[in-house]
Amino acid sequence: MTEEPRFKFGKNWQNFLESISDEQLRNASSALSNLLDAESLEDESFLDAGCGSGIVSLAARQLGAERIHSFDYDKDSVEATRTLHSSSTSADDWTVEQGSLTDADYLSKLGRFDTVYSWGVIHHTGAMWQVAESLPSLINPGGRLVVAIYNDQGTLSSLWRIIKKVYVKSPSPVQLAIAGVYFLLASTARTAKNLITLHSFRRTRSRGMSGWHDAVDWVGGYPFEVASRKQVTDFFESKGFTTEKVLSVGSRQGCNQFVFRAQSSPMAEVQSKQ
Image 1 (spheres, rainbow, N blue to C red):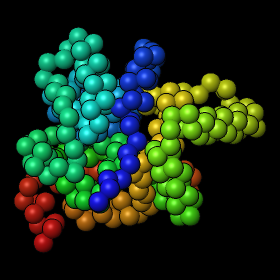
Image 2 (image 1 turned 30 degrees about the vertical axis):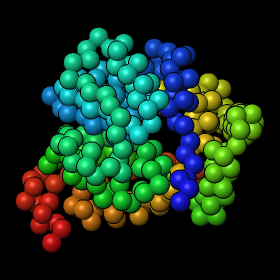
Image 3 (image 1 turned 90 degrees about the vertical axis):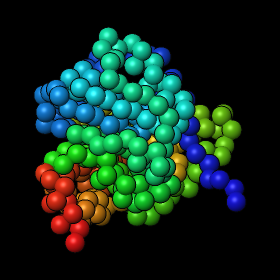
């Protein structure tokens, strides 16, 4: 059986780190703080499950997280994160390694964390709901789960799945052309919106990323799965979580972002499943 093609996220993020700025690092820290409604992660443990560039792990360190564990399936993403790890002046108790969210044995050895962060990751595993089932076991009682999952747009999502699959199977020049066309179209649409609303032309990347690297990440992101806002909240609430925050994209393209809170005691979690 031929393995499905996969986008090389790590190559993209290594390129991104070559031009990363202090402003982008500040944006990432601010975005994490705002998403969690927390000015500090002092005395907390943080799991970055699918760490990508590593910028969020570094943000967690800057917010004072006591223990950080970062892992990714993609070896180049691991190396990108190690680059930020080595540049940190306070890298103690910050572990970076290769691992997969679809590897139950690996996950069973991680232990539990106060915050489990998996932004834009599980929909690229090829086994989204299987991975979702495994996430509760990684969270301390009363801890947070942060996930961001592509919004289900029906037929449009099916079309994007085809485009993304074509992208990952294509040679580099074709990939560059696809990403370039998408970037130009998205930039033109954004500029038109700014003109109509009189907003600033400068686009601030809320999570510290750049527009071009986000564009490449979007068109290349395969495997590709989607879910509606209701599907995600219903699933995790059925596991005993409370929904604390949802940042919805409505009917548009992109990720719905969720912050869930685990039951405050293991006994409550067991009872919720009975």
